[in-house]
Image 1 (cartoon, rainbow, N blue to C red):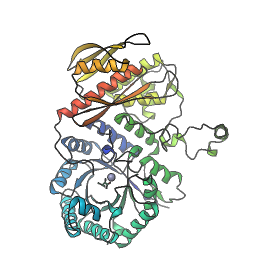
Image 2 (image 1 turned 180 degrees about the vertical axis):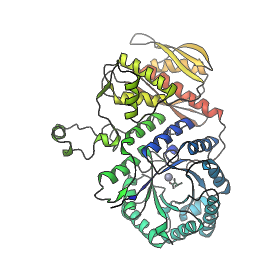
Image 3 (image 1 turned 90 degrees about the vertical axis):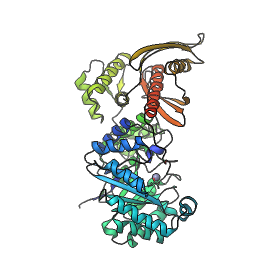
Image 4 (image 1 turned 45 degrees about the vertical axis):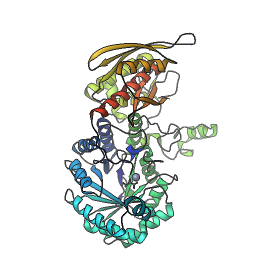
Length: 515
Ligand code: KIV
Ligand code: ZN
């Protein structure tokens, strides 16, 4: 039987980026977009080009880089928005403009202050304008699940008549339930003219924890595009989690017969790890599919069963999502070739200077640590893509601390190419390190959060530190990985400061966020 495609529309770089603390710079977005293409997503929503110069440039850079996937830019229905999105995606091999306007009476009355007729005119005008840039136009009725169903039929029919080929039905506030949402999709497919030639798309938020269930119910009722994000990140409680919806369709293929997402599922875990490392936002340990405990069997009776036959308690293998088992993979005698091969098996293509940096880190780690796990290598590889045009480069750290000593730190940085050094004391060693770095960089930022995460089990595990700082309302996260948690802390803080510098050098236009 030939299979039908469920298009995976990834919005990690747009709706996902709207989660607190998940903002990314161009290099980070590009690295993720390249990984998303490897993962096999059908559409990459690369950003909201009118939102800022940074967003526009990121969408443009992704459009130039990506070969297979459709590259999409989001736009409200205004002329300026569509124009900006059109320009941002124009060099993509497969460009798409995604335009949206709210359709619920709640939004019409309180937010847009427009009548239903005015919204219909706006839908018609904007879709026609978008079609002037590309034949691939998607239209979304924001807050669709709280909109009048008959009015939605009018809205979507107008959009389709004006040229939209994908009609998206967002559950913007995460309000709907599987039965209701499935019925809504069936209603629209039954009433919108020429529905057979259109793709109905779903976009769910997870406020009631139902985003994946709602998306699956919609698929059952004929939706053929699912909008989702890696690790389920997104506005408030997040969006439909890509890994959950894809694996539900795969593991329960008996329930969703004849449907295929074309996702290379072995790339799921590397993609999830790359996102966590870029944003510094780790998934909760019990997160389905990609959480630390998702394949950990703790109860004796379960362990016994899994050892006898994995099928007793495992509905999918870690390997099927690209999660290599926690085995010893390389040692200090391993050379460049073995290291490169292993990284590529783990889904990382690290080249040139980044490769050399990663290889040196691996060698240093192999000297310091008895056992090197795949997770260690992933952390090193992900760390090596965090390259900006860096103003500050961490060069070294000496530390004095303990129960009798006043903590003090001497930090060496390369600042605009010159080596500088500063000593400072603090309440604890991290405070001392951060005071020295603040002194050297003259930063006015405020420390919002400091987190440490052990990359693997074992006392000699590498520490992955993430530091959130804020200046003038701009919040960024920096990461650092090292077997010495204090060095990881210094690297994470310097990384965050580099990101702030990067933002300062680009003057973002005052534009909308938080759709
Ligand atoms: O949640 C939402 O309604 C959106 C739209 C822009 C699709 O993100
Ligand atoms: Zn959304």
